[in-house]
Length: 47
Picture 1 (cartoon, helix red, strand yellow):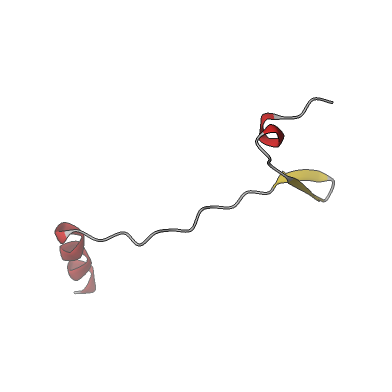
Picture 2 (cartoon, one colour):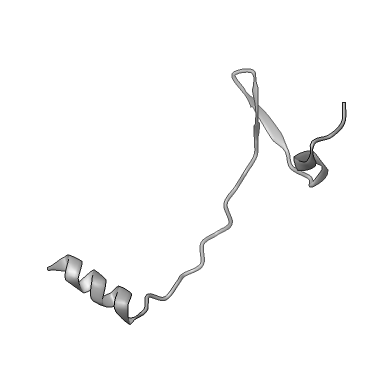
């Protein structure tokens, strides 16, 4: 059987209840600064 594109890119699967589930992981989130308008919005929500 031909490999899927996911497998060609070194993706792996695990089996759950008879289904093959791709092993996916989100990248770690980086800290994002909040601009002045975001800060004002957060201050408004705290009131």
